[in-house]
Image (cartoon, rainbow, N blue to C red):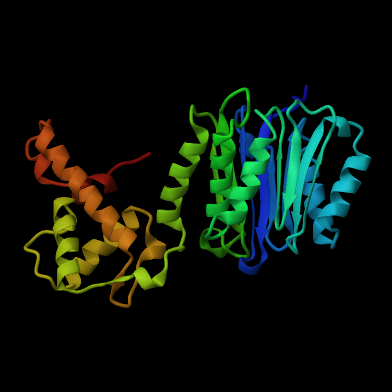
Length: 325
C-alpha cells in the first residue's frame, strides 16, 4: 500500500536567471524531505510540492514548464486537475524567473505562501506567518549566488520558529546547465540531511564541504602565488601528512608537484588543481588544517604498531593497494 506523504514543511523555490541557476531549499519535520519536495531542471524551472505532497507535480510540472507554460499557469492547471487540492501546497519558479504558489485551505495551520521577485516561499504547520515573510526578506537582501541566498533564507525561517513540530530533515537542490559532476548533467548541488537534530545547520556544514571539494565558486582574485613562502608551507604540511620526504626547499620541484597532486586526488579536489603557478587559498587552508590535526594526533596518540606515528595518512598507498573488497 502506498504511503501518503504529509511533510509539514517550509521551502523556497527561486531562480537567478542571469547566472542560469534554479533551485529549492527545504526543511521538514519529516524524514528524507529531499526525496519528495524538490524538483528542478536547468533552463526549465523549479518546483516544491509539499503538505500532502503530490509528487506528480514534480515531473509533470517540469514537463509543462519545458513547453513554455508559465509558473502562474502551471499552478492553476495542476491544482485544478487535483482532486485533493485542498490539502496540497506548491511553489514554482519558471525559466524566466517568474514565480507562483498555492496553499490549499486544508493544509495544517499556520499555512501560507509569499511570492516575490524570482522566488516563492511556502510553508505549513508553521509557527506563524513570520516564517515565510522572513525567508522572503532574507532571500531578497542576501548577496551572492543562489545557493548562498537559499540557505540564508532557510536559516532565517528557522530563526522565526520554523515548523512548529520541530526539526528533522533538510535539502538543497540547485541546477545549472552542464554543472553536474563531470558536466554530465545539470545537478550542480544536490545535498540532503535525512534525519538530524539540527538539520539546517548540518545542511550548511555539508554544503561547505561540498563547495570546497566539488564546486568552483571562489573568486579568482583570491588565488595565491606558488612563491617560495607558500611552497614551503605546502611542503611542510605534505611532509607531516606523509606525502613528501625531505627538507622544505621552497621550490615546486617534480617531487613536490607529484606529492601535491596525490594529496589533491586522494581528497577529491581534482577540479581545484591548477597549472598556472597558483593555488586556491581554501586548498592551502585545508592542507594546513589537516597537517595540524595530524600533529595533534601524534602528540596525543600511543602507537599500536611500531613506527606507525612516523608515517602520515599519505604514506599508506602500498598498504591500500593490497586491500580487496
